[in-house]
Length: 326
Ligand code: HPA
Ligand code: ZN
Image (cartoon, rainbow, N blue to C red; front, side, top):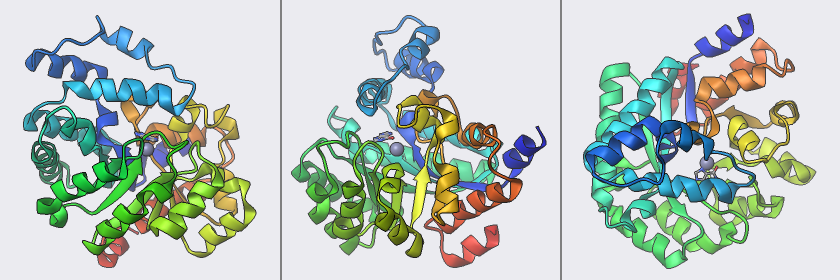
């Protein structure tokens, strides 16, 4: 439709993208072959057929398994390059990408191999597509606080090349309060702070992310809508929410795309953005997510301009660079 092509052409930023979640099945086979690793799938079709989830944990189990083929600096560089090529095709001008170092260091891959590979891919993206980007180190919340502290220490040589830290993996049972001290330490090193909260977890977890982690940006945040006072607080403070429609659908955070709360978020005055989360696993890159929402027929072209505008406003680019995108 006309709206689809208008939305596809909008310059946008992507603020919620797990680089390990951009590993396409074809690339999984390619990395497995060149690293001589056995994978428990016979074909790309078999891999895709396994991507059927009824909750976050179903996805996480298969996502951590997929990451096992990533071994060398070249793998991480190629992974990032492939993502940025897709992003460029969707008119993404800036991306702030998550990585999960603990998924790799636990398998004996040094932190520096992961970080150097991703940073090289980001430099390639700038040169080849003119896309700017930032790196956000996510702590795995199902692991201990001490493991997060160890990871933050491993990152020390990279503090000037990492924009911030985040919190991902299994939300239920792992509230933000578990990471209050490591987030305070990250803040003291000049890093920005973001956290996944209110995807499966209750509104109390969002409040903890605000009060105890002092986040600069909220990842997902869907369940904030259950608490009107929390919504008012998020709206008044201009907090950016990085919302992921196709992820929400595939992980059964919403039953039907027509029930997706992004329209309600906008009408409530929240600074919501549209993002792809783990595009290789959830059926689409950022424009597929915009298109899924456009298909509901409830948002206008002006609403999509607002959403794209929010994506730059919510970024960690310096003010002068943000303005240049608006
Ligand atoms: N939620 C929690 N952890 C994750 C996600 C997510 O959507 N994607 C990758 N790790
Ligand atoms: Zn996520």
